[in-house]
Length: 136
Image (cartoon, rainbow, N blue to C red; front, top):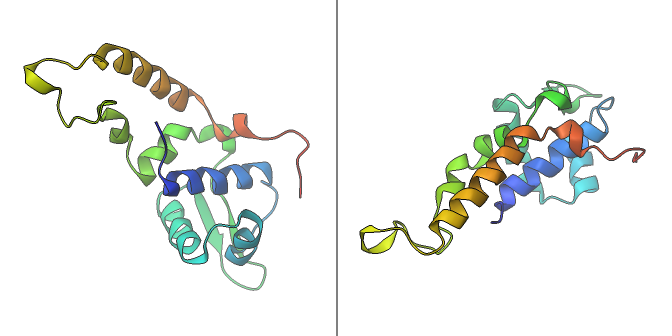
């Protein structure tokens, strides 16, 4: 299972902000530090703001920062806002539906694995991803 590029970038941006929660970062600075393509980053920041993860302040010293504490943001919320959790509902074998009116050979294994992944995503906060002692 792979996250989309948008989800990976969203988690990177929010994790960075969780690591540096006392700072406000401009989009330009985030672009330099995280090396996310500029147009992609601008759209992502807009979407993260609309989803309530970050807020922005205007003006000379304006920028972006987390809207709520990192320990109140779980990974499942981020993924759901960016690409939806239904991405995990796809068949691991690539079928749209299980073929021949029965489940594929991987169905039960994937179902258990998917449930475990969802449990981790629902129980992991940004705060838990923070890197101790890491500051720029």
